Every structure is written in C-alpha cells, then in structure tokens.
Amino acid sequence: MTSSISASSQLSKTLRSHYFSLPQGGQCQVTYIWIDGSGEGMRSKTRTLDCEPSGIEDIPEWIFDGSSTGQATGENCDMFLIPVKMFRDPFILDPNKLVLCEVLKYDRQPTETNHRHHCKKIMEKVKEYNPWFGMEQEYTLLGADEYPYAWPSKGFPKPQGPYYCSVGADRAFGRDIVECHYKACMYAGVKISGSNAEVMPSQWEFQVGPCEGTEIGDQLWMARFLLHRVCEDFGVIATLDPKPMSGNWNGAGCHTNFSTNATRAEGGLEHIEKAIDKLRPQHAEHIRVYDPHGGEDNKRRLTGLHETSPIHEFSAAVANRGVSIRIPRHVAQDKRGYLEDRRPAANCDPYAVTAAIIRTCLLEGEEEGDILSDLEINELE
Image 1 (cartoon, helix red, strand yellow):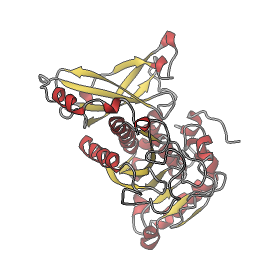
Image 2 (cartoon, rainbow, N blue to C red):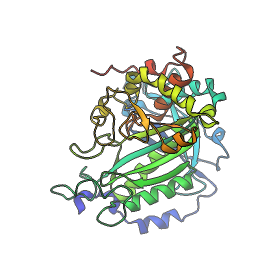
Image 3 (cartoon, rainbow, N blue to C red):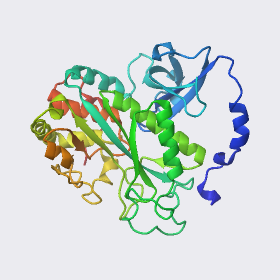
Image 4 (tube, one colour):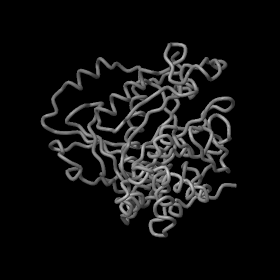
C-alpha cells in the first residue's frame, strides 16, 4: 500500500549502486551524529577527510546550527560537535565512518541534552566496581502514515498472544528490517547481542551489551541511529514511543540490566538485594529521568498492566515481569549475577538512566555530578 511507504524509499536502489561502486580517490566520508534538543531525536551531517582516520583522535571537531535543532538561538547558533566514538559505516562501507559526538555550547559547556558529559564523570568515580550494563531496546515499526506497520488499514490485528518471538507471515511483521539492522550493527562494530519479536505485533526488540560505564550509552545511541537509517531505506518509521497504541497492547521499554564485581561474584545476590534496597526510596527520582519528559511518557506505559508495575509504586521479585526490578530466575538460583530495572521507557537517554543507577547504588547520594538535578525537569504530578 503506497500510503504506508515513504516516497524516498521508492527511488531506484539499482541506480544508486552504480555511484556507490565509484572509487573515492583515497578520501573518506565521515558522518557526524548527535542528539538534538529534544533529547531523543538524532541528527547527522557528513564531511570529507583526506584519508581514513585510524582512531577517534583523527576526527576533527566541527560545528552545526543549533538554532535548527532546538539547542541554540539564531543570534548565537554555532554549536561544537566533539567526536567521542567511531564506527564503520554500513551504508556506504569502508573506509567511511560514522562518528558519535557530544554537543557543547559556545562556552564549551555541555548542552541540556548532553547527558554523556555528566555520565562520564560519574562512571569515572566508580570504575573500580566495573559496572556492567545491558539494555533491551523495544521499538515499534510504523508505516509512513504513522499507523503500525502491516496492521489492517481499518481496524486491528488479532489480539496479543501469538506475536512474541513469533514466526510466520501472519505474525511477524517487518523481519527484513530487523535482520538488516542486526547486520548493520555488526558491521559498524556496535555491541548488539540479540533481537526478537515483541508482544505487540510490529513491535521488536534488540539488546546491546554488556558494556562498561558510558560505553553502553555510546553503543545504544549508535544502534538507534542505525535503526532509523535502515528504516529510512525501507520506507517505514521506527518509533520509541513508550505507548504507541492505547488499549490492550503492550508498551515499549528499555529494560536495563546492571551488575558489578560484587554482584557477579560468589554470593552476589546479597549485593543485588542491597542495591534494590537503595533503589526503593529513590523511585520517584528515577522515574523523573527514565524518559525525556520527566515521567510523562512513562505514565502512559507504567500502568500495572501489560508486564509493567504502576508508575508510583516500587516493587521487586524473582522472575516477575510485573515489577519495577526483576531478579532473573537463573540469578536467584546461582545467587549471583545482575538485576533488571524494567522502568526505563523506550525513549530514555541511556546515559541518564545508567548514571542514575550508579548514583543510587554506588555513590549513595553524593552531590558532585548529580545528574538528577542537572536534568532540571518537573516532578510528577
């Protein structure tokens, strides 16, 4: 149906392949990627380097117009792009690169949505704990008409039940996109660790990690960029909206797995339980940073239904997907491993989420590097 596919995806890919086969004369295209003023949108632009960079230190700083991305005013619009992580480009191939960047203002201070800057300081303070994170990114595929991809144009598909980890043309919608994204991540060097179809039809998940410190945020943001870029080729949209369809349909989260040297060691379950005890009184603060809008997006998702815990209640249990913090069954049996924080929304900032977990579980409320106050967002009503 043409109304559900974008016009740009209908351009000839065969014709494009001719130009992609042309030699580059030893030069290299580098695409700079950053998070915009919304805290969830991504932007990019490309420049030519005279030769292939051997590392991030070979990528020069650049600038962009912050007034067009919600990050500056027109009379003082130049913002700095600071390269922090380099990946291979799976779209135009080697030697070309994708580069994730931090954004700094004219005074070289981090922008309001540059949570990596603060996260890095916090992670440096706890590096002896070797904190590992794994994040499970759920997303929903939409047609260009912004209705779930492959859903009936008038009405709804069959109720939830047969779609999770499914196979079959009547159950799994958009697998080509999922598999191309997986391959693109592997080529780029993203630490993708798996994928599966989710509970709602046209909803999928990929997992990134385990990664230590700020690395999980770098990897997840690049995986998100690759997802949007792959979807662009196919003419569909990937949304990270935590509740894209109201009614009896699952929402979308970004479940975050967390462990330290102590929780992974013999008898680590005791340290997991201590971490949960620290998370409990800070529940409201964590909800504030677990989506870009101070919990307002998660209000639609964390209802106590559809494998969630109510947004104003904190709970923890073994093998229970209706709680705030789940201890996986094998962790309880082995008495060591990790905890799963099920509260972060699909559109969360991974730097903000992981920094908040570290502050609560390992720094115990130290004032320095307080990412919760840095976010400057309103309390939940």
